[in-house]
Length: 583
Image (cartoon, rainbow, N blue to C red; front, top):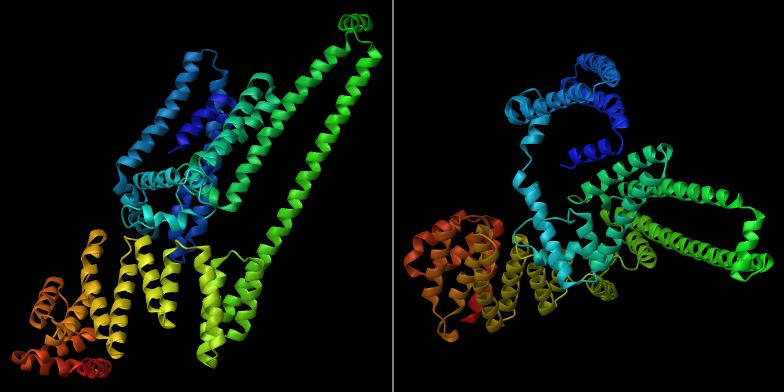
């Protein structure tokens, strides 16, 4: 969307250079693009015709380039400005009409493209990847900035975005660099970044006003390139890519170079004019100021020395900072390399290699929570092999450190909660699983993990004959469905867990527990019908349990038992053994 604006700015800054760029760059690029489409198709079909298309494209580029070159040379020779600009306008109209025709005949244009290109274009969802979605992300970023006007630190968008999102749309970046800066460094960072652009524009204006064509032409080209990158970054995260960001800063440096050339040139001119003053005028001026020429020279020398010392101090300070950054980045890179080696060992379950390597990675990059939690998995894997309790203790230490470093991350809270449940910390595990879905309220998977955990915890309590605690967790799961539906649409996977809770409660709520057995079973059947649950797999043991308790459903009970496979029969046997302890 910024391309026409960039063209107009370049045209305004330098019309002649713009025409040359159009002739010798835009036309060949367009022809190569057009010729590339059938090349893709030919290569896809393993046809030698691809080389023919390449030849045609090169020939067409040369022919059209020279044709347009002669056209513009002829236009330049026309003395009447009205005729000259009319010819250029005619060419612009032809290009514009051709572009509009292609845009309005979208389906026909697609027909000329290879199938792979057509499929890729058809997969583009303009509702999800269009400008309106990016505006939503910018609005969300501004909400975060309002709550954190001084920023939340590097990488702060990823864990905080799910808490502010208004629909289920995942994005690891803001898709706008200025707002990304705002989230991470706050309003001061946005002002500083905007000030850099203001300074760049000021430099270009100075070059245009005081410089010659030798400085203006290259500076204008560099400025337009920087503006193209910066303009695109308003609606994308391209500057989050290190290489692209380096390009932009290099362009800033080039514009500053031409600006310094203009300033130094003007200063030299003024100095030369000053040197032409006669000695008499200098003496008169010194006399009027009440200073001798010798005193004035001494003052100037002192000023130069002070400036030199200050300048040298700044240089040494910058040098020390750069050395510090070099050392820090080197240690971070070494930690990264260690982490990659440890990951390879983890995939092969070589715990003895993975653990010390991850410990090195943590030593050199102690703020990386991923390394800490990878150590949790490694120590837990080693514990399963050795049964050494010390490994679990170390795993807990690294898990606590990981959650301390990134307490808002939903995935980390989920993994931490599941780990705590595995080592028997039920309350701590459920608390972090709850935090996981609260941080990503539109993510159905986080809710499912929590519901599955509630069922598992309830059944553990029942096995331990803690019937009251099990009943409370099952009731919590049933009530949890309302919270789930506030942010998500009805889910069959979620309702399966709720169905299990109704069945288990129906069995538990006997006269001893002051419950309503028939009522819970009726609600279970109503939910199954509403959610269109299919009677298969993991639901069969619970269905069999319900029909076993309902005397009039003996026939259905026998049918369900016949459907159950070995795993389902094993679960059903465990449920009966556990639950009938109540009686």
